[in-house]
Length: 482
Image 1 (cartoon, rainbow, N blue to C red):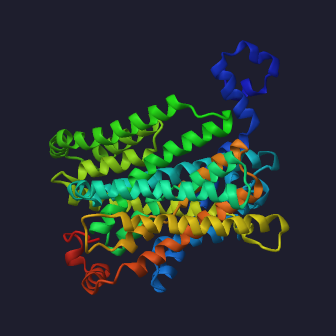
Image 2: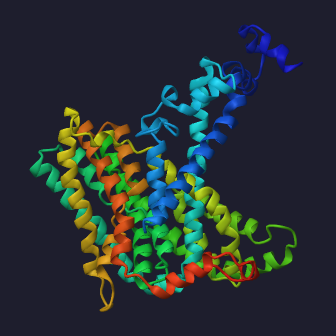
Image 3: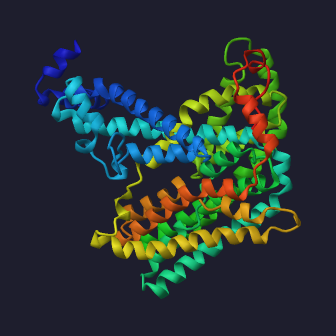
């Protein structure tokens, strides 16, 4: 029977249709226009993303700032805080505020009844692409990191991570309860949000500065990875506490064991997988002989991490570390970079677009209490991470201030804490606003501060300028130096 004939039948006849076909028919009837225009909305969104990232990145570069900061600011400009070009439901936007939906109605004939459904699906697609972007970013960072050097600073990274979690969590929770008389569960939730560290933002800036392979960069990166694992455990604990009023000890034990086993297993896997990967790559002769097997491996580890309730980005980072030890590492790094150039900006622009700066308006009475609490949280967020550099041992010439600054940005990780707290009902509006302000400022402060605390390297800048100069004779053979 033709689909057009089926969709014209009375709904009572759907009782004769199998359940899986009912879903298809009802979806087709509900949003026929939106299903055909979702792609158009996604394409327009990507145009906005790439324009914002490129313009923002170029302006930041001209002012001597890391391009990633420009991408974040570009996202804020096109997001819910300003132009409403790229808005998301979780960022406070809706279909009526999206200028892309308005443009689709005006130019592509999108029916008003289908706007909400189109907006929802389009937003989900961009969010998935953003998540894919951060997975690719962490895979690329793993390729640029040296596993042996990372293990060499493993103890220091572990100490830095533990201090970076315990100090801000304890200071934030106790301070909120004693100074602002916040109830225990909301205070614990806000304290937990202070523990986060955005490995994506920090690693990107370190890579741009050419400091990713430095001792400081390796300690920051290792600590951020461990911090992510500890942060996931803390989030699970406080989310359980907010929902039930008691901590699920079995879940906490499960997370600790699974996280430890996953990271150790990934490291040990590298010793076995390296030779197999090289053999497979040498056997393949068609396009993508390196990138396709590499991404199969990266996505498999990312899936495995997500399946055991860890972060998918940890799996991607572990895959990069494993493949960094192969003989094909340099060529693979060159082939992954263009893919990252397409997907990673979606992540950073989306983070900025979801950030609502209206919580910074002091003339709004409901924001004032949040701003006062935010000032306290910002101080704890900065100081609580700066002290991590002081606990590094066995490295007398280390740049301790750079390590502390590298741990400051909360980024998307902090927004996850705020989102879970808001959804659970544990956070009041002022406290939720305070956490968002803390996340915004620590995210935007860290990139320029990292450039300040890391002294400029004239040789590295000279190499970078030569690298960026158009030279077809060498561009195809010379590996890009980070």
